[in-house]
Length: 197
Image 1 (cartoon, one colour):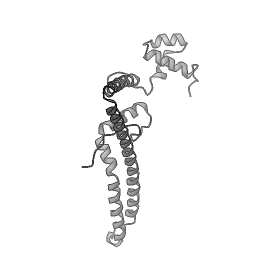
Image 2 (spheres, one colour):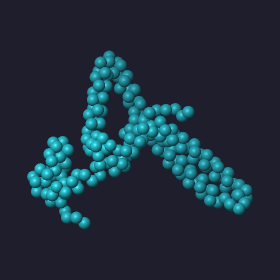
Image 3 (cartoon, helix red, strand yellow):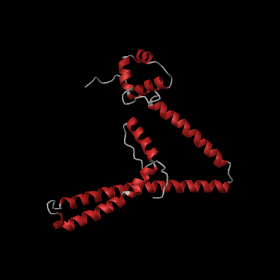
Image 4 (tube, one colour):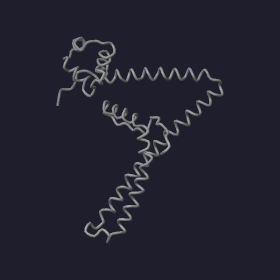
């Protein structure tokens, strides 16, 4: 186990901020804070691999925030240009779409859990089937078939949602890998609403 750092978490955050935001060199920061350059490199680099563009994940997130904030301002200005009655309609529609998205995400999560449980029960029924003479355990085979059919039915909502939001799911997966923290796609993400084919 390494030695305990002589700097506080706040000082490390300040070093990272000054390096990334103010472009202060690691060499200059090491001299100022009285620590080795290698200590700074180890502390602010692990788990923060550059994106394919060569930018740090924090830079990528900052650029994305600027883009989202700009888009939000543009939409807000468009809504402000509408008559008051239409502004209320847009607000009400947005609220309903957000609610629908959240409920569909929750339904998909519950359906996926149900599909998993039904598949486990189907597997338990299949374990009871006599492999030498399967027809002697026809009841177990019928139970397996019924449970597996229900499991497949329960998986339709989550599978349709995953297919409709393939790009969003992949993006969340990439962010999850970069940040090494769990992400629940059913929370805080507005999904496309699609009707099953």
